[in-house]
Length: 193
Image (cartoon, rainbow, N blue to C red):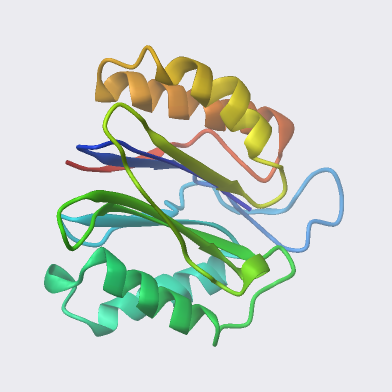
């Protein structure tokens, strides 16, 4: 039902999503498209972003739990706890939900956290290191790892600008869209510097 990709470095976090929402479950080779222009990421405040793939209605309920707080002062770490707690109370279609939370943590360091329904929303957090990129992705109906290995990781060494990163992530989503009809090439991007 969607694809989301995230890259965090020592001084930024960027996310790109597609815009397609399809009816679940997908019953044949041509899914019923509900929306073509639905961003699956949200900049919560100047410090962090949240993106998702999977059951869109469930994911939106989960992410909207952050609105119960003054988001201007919400930390990435607190948001992850809120999202995990809320997620455990929301019914999810068999396609599941995967959330990515990236940006500046409470101590100013860049973090990327992944949590999803398949592991009861147990957060997996990584800290960006100098000279390296954290690269994560999620897709509802397609294994994302081969696309990250073939399309993103080989280009990461030659990135010189945020435009280079956006081009790579857009290209990865385009490749996923060729293989998975629940994904389109309407790109939505957000960044934290």
